[in-house]
Length: 148
Length: 135
Image 1 (cartoon, each protein chain N blue to C red):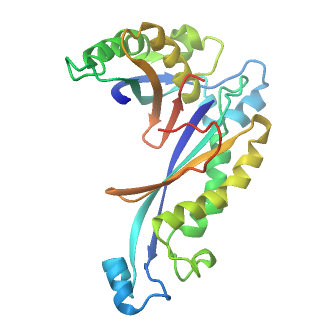
Image 2 (spheres, rainbow over the protein chains, first blue to last red):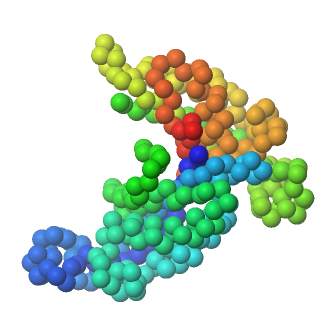
Image 3 (tube, rainbow over the protein chains, first blue to last red):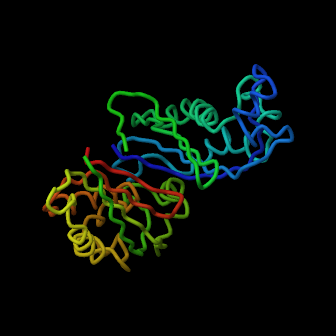
């Protein structure tokens, strides 16, 4: 089993706000991220797939296929968008980087694992840096999953 | 358990090709990486060793040991080389980032005197890397 990671970038705007909280609570919980006009980030996305090396090609997964799936399912939908207003996905959820990680994992898992089904490819994890000072990672609980 | 990582760099050229494939298949599967004249990368290898801290030294292992091992076993073998032509493991196997991670693991693990090799990570460039844990 080899773990292959590819990095991608997208830029998007968002506002952290929960309608269930009152204005004071939103300001207390989300601080400057609650600014009603929104703000933006250059997100750095890491996608890790795990699988056996194909003896004929030496590859775990075709990078062109990986790039195509990530571009179609994530980058084209998220890049240069307002995550709160442009995206169905965050109508009822706050577009925190935690929720973005979960959403991106959900969007990628099926197409990637179907494309690599002949070698039992797994989407191992999705890691997202909101800025160079903070990062978030979603690793589903699966038996045999490698940590660290 | 503590994990200690040492990084090393080498620059090398390679290309991807399978003689069992037709020229069209090789071009379709490997794309621009199929150029037989090769192309190059600045590779970064991270070797992570796990172990317990020796109470007398405060160390899992002498990092110099890992540095020397990386230099002798990997850098001298691969730096400024054409991997397909000059590294025996890749005479009949594509030097992909995935295969490099496995090969570097296989070269280092029998030579490591202290601690256990936990992970080999090979960066082909800052946006692409492969991890191998030995299984």
